[in-house]
Image (cartoon, rainbow, N blue to C red; front, side, top):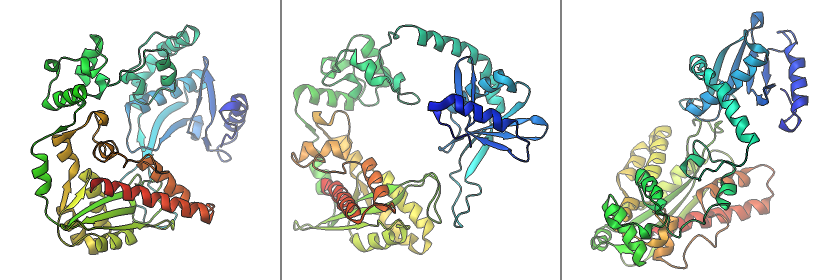
Length: 426
């Protein structure tokens, strides 16, 4: 391992050069070696030394497949190495990524977690373009700030760290920008070119779908759209009604036996049960032991959800997907878990079709819908207010060095957040 970090590049390069001259039996694999050519500096994830002074470069990504931007990443590194002295010795380029078919079955045994893909030929095709890119970017660095309007390109494939800086010199965004129109990428670009910034200024006849026109009209008038069918649709749902929501965590490197890389693993649920006479019960589950929460989750969920009636969710694909995973992991409960899936009714498409309020700003996230229906009941009073916060809270609460009082505080915050999601559906 070349230990000097990016603040000490020259030290890292000195370390790298010292390790490269070591015999193969002393150093066969270098992690984070540092190289530079023509002002371009790179740190290679892994450089493997082979017999006869041949080398393989290995780039490691935490995702589950090779992406186009990964190939460019490797092409830049390959160009720097070859131009800097490895012209005749770097002949293989690999990309290693998590194999999401890997199942963790023995404690401490991660053999097969990384899938190594030979991308040499793909990188070779890109290499002729690299010198021109370097020249172009050096010119950008030497020149004034480029006069480019921000847009979707600023977030592709990743968000640019200068986005806020560039937006600060532009006109402030419109109150209801045309970008809020759903499924309107080409139309939005066309309207922007014509000078339309606020959705309320766009002629309705320019919009392509009924949903776009509904959103634009509600935004202009400030009056929520509620279809005549919504009340009857909701009233037709049988009783009792069970509302459920899961919180999950995903690890690149599996921690619990029987799990896969990036598998969404539920550690918490909330369940409200609404009866026809107006009574509402609440049941919940949260495991912060750090051990696998899955067996306890399955048992508690089966006990919590009412035996009859619909199971209401917001985005059925997510909760149903987690139950299908659990059915495969716990075959003795498969029939029961699939029975829960069969009873699911998704509220999200129902509200997409029948409801829109201007304050939702083009989103049917439950966090956007709730305040428009129940003013004063939102997520602003919660310490943990979204799924990302919940995952971070879970990680902090299960860390071995987290004090007991902090763990208890996080437990209550997680319970409050998940309960709010199912109360919102009620």
